[in-house]
Each structure stands twice: as structure tokens, then as C-alpha cells.
Amino acid sequence: MRTHLTRPAILAASLVAAGALLAVPGTATAAVPASDAPSSTATASGHGLKNFQQRHGLAATGVVDGATAKALGKASDAELHQTFRTAADLGPEELANARTVIGVGKGAGIPEQGQVIALMTAMQESKFVNYLSPVDHDSLGIFQQRPSTGWGTPEQITDVPTSSKSFYGVADFGSNPGLIQIAGWETMPPGDVCQAVQVSAFPDAYAQWEGFARDLLAQESPTVPPIP
Image (cartoon, rainbow, N blue to C red; front, side, top):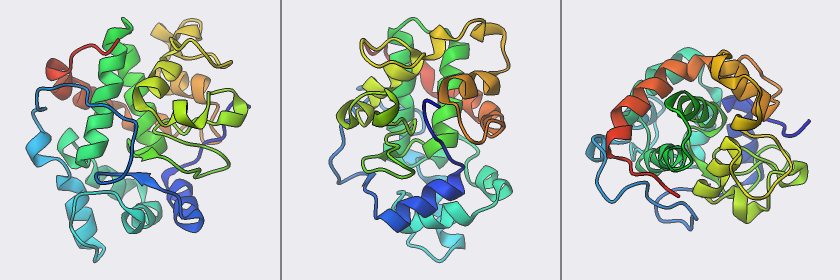
């Protein structure tokens, strides 16, 4: 098994129990902006999170902190889909990370279908939160990649552009096949491709985010430049 991945409930519960550090505004993070130009949703990002926080009696900051992660971990799939409907529902740091995934895909010449698959994966694994400390086993970053299973060093995994390259299979390090190493990925169901790269304990969980990922790409891609 190349990596051990969990549903959002297990991710968040493990996060709170372990006191893991989140990469949120105001904390150190290796992520870089995907574009100097503001996204179409930049001024409204965190809308869904704020509503979720209000429903759960939390400070409506629109930022994913430990308390919000714990609440998200207890939420049903139905509530998660109610919370995350558009790009504007992601927090500002998470939206920036999603834009980085898109930019790296463009820079590597990955077709839009591959970018959708990467967005689906990160949405399922982390909601684009860049976990700087382990959540489940030694899983880190937005793709919940594990240093112990060949995905790179913790520093590489928690650098969003670098971890995105690893997922796409265009990084110059690591021992795991990424997207473009999966034979026939272009014609496979997107959720199956996510699972082929990630080898998750919950193989059917990725498909639920396909619509969100396609809408996210369509909305954000026009203002995201390629990231080499």
C-alpha cells in the first residue's frame, strides 16, 4: 500500500486528537499563490465554511481551524455537500491551494480531465487544507501523502506545488506512480483514477466530488497561470 487515506471524519478526528497543525492564514506554509491576479471568488471565499461554523456554534471566520475540523469530521456527507457547493465555499487559503493544483497541472501539460481528478482527490482527502503535521499515520499535505511510503520528504509533501507534481506524476523524486503513470487514466472513471494513485481505504469516496471539481476548475482556471 502506497498511502493510507481516510474519510473526512477520520481525518478531522485524528487531527484534533493529535493536535496537528493546519496551514491556515497566519501560520507558516510552503504554498505559493497560483496567480497574481485575484480569483473570481477571492472576495467571497469561506462563505460555506462560515455558514457551517454558525450552524455549529463556532466563530464564523471562514477559516478551517481545529474546532472547525472536528465539526467537519462529525458532519454527514449530506452536510458536507451542503457546505461545499462552489469555490466560494472554500476558505481563502484552501482556495489558493486549489488554484495551485490547477496551475501546476497547466504547467505540466496535464489535460483538464487530469486536473479535475487532482482536485477531486485533494477535496476528498483534505478539503485543500495543507496539513503540516501528521493526521493519519504520517499523512501530510493536501493530498495526504506519506513520507514512509515514498511520496517524498515532509517538506516536499507540505509544499503544495511540489506535492501537486507528485500527484500528477511529474516530480523528479519519489517511488510512487502518479496520474500520468496510470495506464489508460484518460478513459477511466475519474474516481477510479484517484484511487489508483492514492490506494485509499475508502476507494469509492472520491467520485462524490467530481461535480464540485469540474465547477471549481471551470470557475478558477481562466485566471490561473501555469506553474512550472
